[in-house]
Length: 180
Image (cartoon, rainbow, N blue to C red; front, side):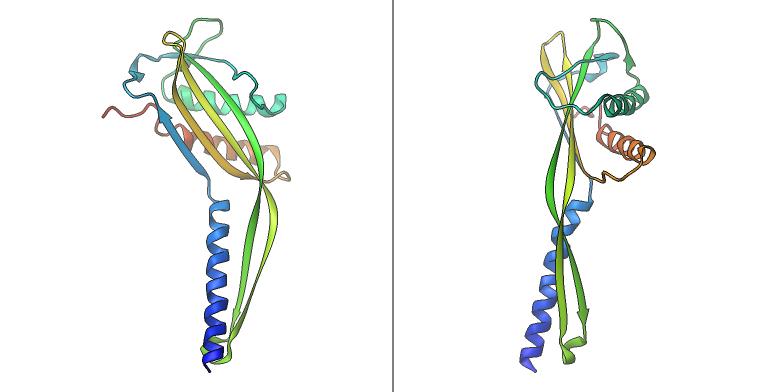
């Protein structure tokens, strides 16, 4: 009886551990930071720039990312301009990494009959986009945001754009930072 209880406890603990490891892979992680003391109310216009040596996707994905960011910044009251004069320079870089995703299965028979648990893993792609905003007058980075999410290479373009729009909306939700 004691052996059955300890096997059930071990199976349940294994299931909880596997479930806890799998949850972060499903969630979208978003964070941002900004230069203290920056007056974000003075920023009305922006233009696209680039980060030297940064990784960028192909032209199609580049256009999708910029479109998504443009929508969010327009909703925040910023106007995109062409040329060399703007209040902000916006740039981004991307990275794709590989992680293990664990899935746990449990089949219990209760305390009396014991139970079984198993786990499997697969390699998934995780994409990160880092969005930077520079003040060209002060020549400094004033805001940076990062969004990380699992990538499904089999997803169609429409779904990819929808996920990108959601990520950019979540990323830029706290831009501009509230005055404290």
